[in-house]
Length: 105
Image 1: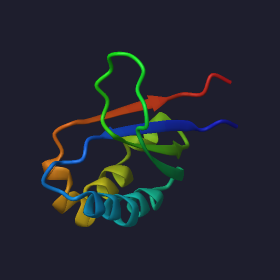
Image 2: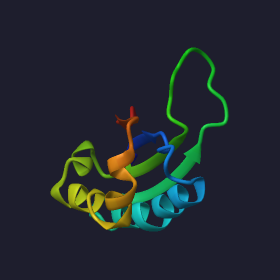
Image 3: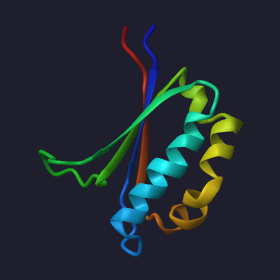
Image 4: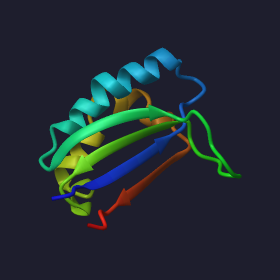
């Protein structure tokens, strides 16, 4: 059975170094979300190239989840709002988008 994907796009705050941003995202935020029931995987990406006139953030995270409801669950919200990432980086983010993708088949 295909899983739902959640794509989160974030621009790194200027006041946070690349090293700190990536460390906290990979070592704090991702593990917290992976502990949520219904989350089966996560992978981070950095934009290499954009064709067209799209103004997209530089960093993407792709999460494999059971259903669209997983992202709205109390467990997801709690995990997303805990830890050093939530205290240090999240308040500084000014550009963030999230897209939930349902499988076609």
